[in-house]
Structure formats: structure tokens, C-alpha cells
Image 1 (cartoon, rainbow, N blue to C red):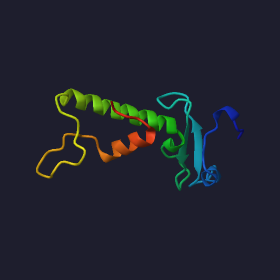
Image 2 (image 1 turned 135 degrees about the horizontal axis):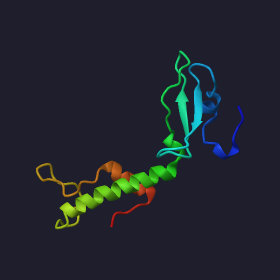
Image 3 (image 1 turned 30 degrees about the vertical axis):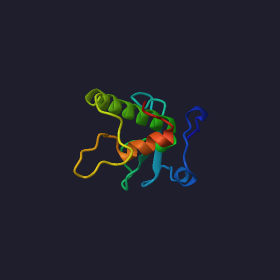
Image 4 (image 1 turned 60 degrees about the vertical axis):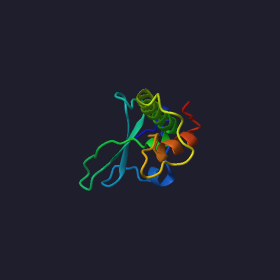
Length: 121
């Protein structure tokens, strides 16, 4: 097989060495159509040599992860703000157990926003 320099993908050394034509080795495929057109997918060859389901390693596409996360947070924030536009600013400390919280952001959302440098205004 030839290497097409325009269709390379990021990978680690061990993963690169796991690519091959034998059972229990990985195969890489270039996606020509669909939502992941232009991406490389990985497909594990089963113990009998048949090809498995193609997958994309999203860890090597941080821009997509950031964009999708921000879009998710914006969508979630838009729904919340429409429902709670009359609510005051969230408290500085968590609500007492007998009081409902005025915020719906999860700790994961806040951590991702902090790491991505995104602030909900």
C-alpha cells in the first residue's frame, strides 16, 4: 500500500505499529462522505480477519471537541436563560440542602468552560 501524504492522521507510536492486514490489527480508512468526510477512521480486524466498525479518535481533533463543547454549553445556557431570566445571579456558595439551587450548570460544564476559556455572559 502507498502512503497518501494528504490523508495522514495523528496517532501514537504504539497505535501506528498496531496497523496491519492481520487479525487483531487495525486498519485505517479515509472517509470520503458523511459528517466525518476528510477524516481518517480506525477499524479493528476481528480474530477471524473480518473488519469491525470504523471509529474516529476524537482525541486528535481538539478543535472539534472545543467547538462541540461550547455549542453544547451555549445551547444549554440558552434554554436555561429563557426559563430563568427572572432569577437573580447565582449565589457565591452552594445552596443549603433544603433549598433548590438556582443554577443548572454542572461541575463538568464549569470545568470545561474554564479550560476552554469560555465564559457565559
